[in-house]
Amino acid sequence: MGRTTRRVWLWKKRLRTIHSPHGNDVVISTIVPESLLTCPQCGFTKLEIMPTDACQFYYACSNCETVLRPNPGDCCVFCSFGSVKCPSIQVRGSCCG
Ligand SMILES: [Zn+2]
Image 1 (cartoon, rainbow, N blue to C red):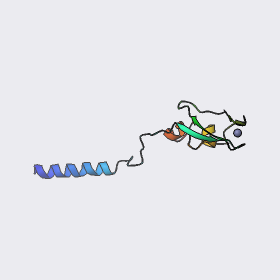
Image 2: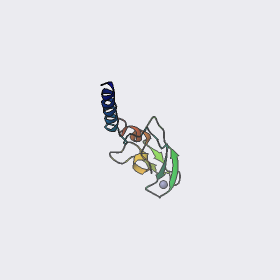
Image 3: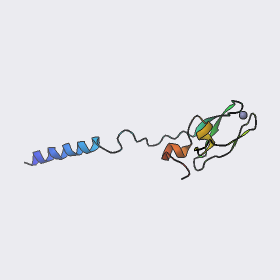
Image 4: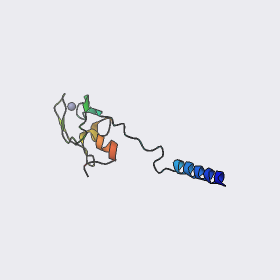
């Protein structure tokens, strides 16, 4: 009797593991802190370190000195012109409320 109970319990436990709502989709985050910004004016690219606690709204191209601003709907210049979305997007999927 005791043995059967124990086996059922193990089976349930295994099921719960498999059906975990998080599954394999959860990435306990490997945040990429660097983004390769490409200037839309001159095509100049530069690897920039992104601030992890704030969004960078302005960015001055170090080649042509054009001040870049995010595209409509984007929270920061990295989301618009970078190779990698900003850390807030990477972690939360959204940014700045
Ligand atoms: Zn430029």
